[in-house]
Length: 281
Image (cartoon, rainbow, N blue to C red; front, side, top):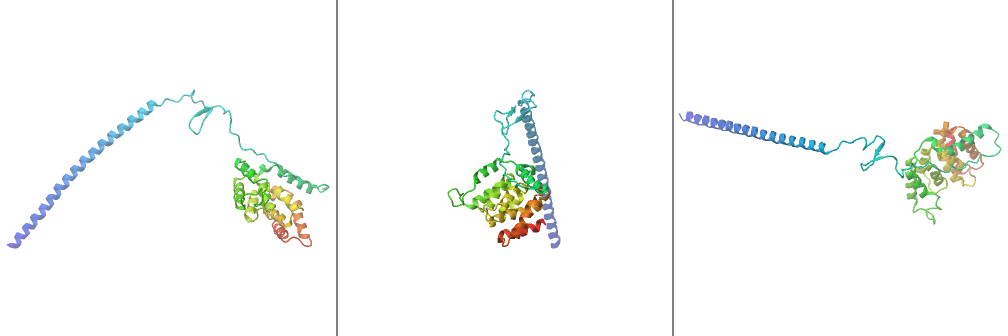
């Protein structure tokens, strides 16, 4: 009898829990429906408000006519429209430069040799033929770097060599072929040396050749300094042999062979001559 009573109480308890749960669920569902209805109403009012603002904005914006903005005009960076040319138009960067003077030796009888020298002179006067970007910044850097200082501790020297290297690197990065003269002078005059400036010249390519050949043939320079020109000239000549024409066969190679034919060639000049010949022959 007692067990039946316990079972009855337990069953009643379970039914009460189920009933309470059902009631809560119905209440929650009703609340959710109410919340969804309110959100839908709010979204509808928001959409209507946005539509009204767009219509108002369109009504306040006058239609642009062809008289106000003719076809032949341009818009400035500040958004204003301008027709015609400016009183002071922006000028493109200049390509002006003073080419190195190529002294063609007298008494040349071999037409191939003469053609090689004429080709060298042509390159010196037409450095833009191999591309490059005229740059006002390049002109600014050239004006700072030239003329050459009398050493970095002299009265006209720059603050330090590192500063000059940074400017030369920027100049080479810009890609203006007028940089070739400046970089060649700093390298071949012994102000700045090493692989970094040598790579700058190699990257400059054909426009650097007239300056490097002039240094290679200059007997007034120390052989160790002439070797700087040979170090860059060999890789350039190998890469751009076709553009250089007979310059490689009739100017560069004969000079390298003459250096190695000396009884006691300079150590540095001889080493660079051997390396360059290995690339070109």
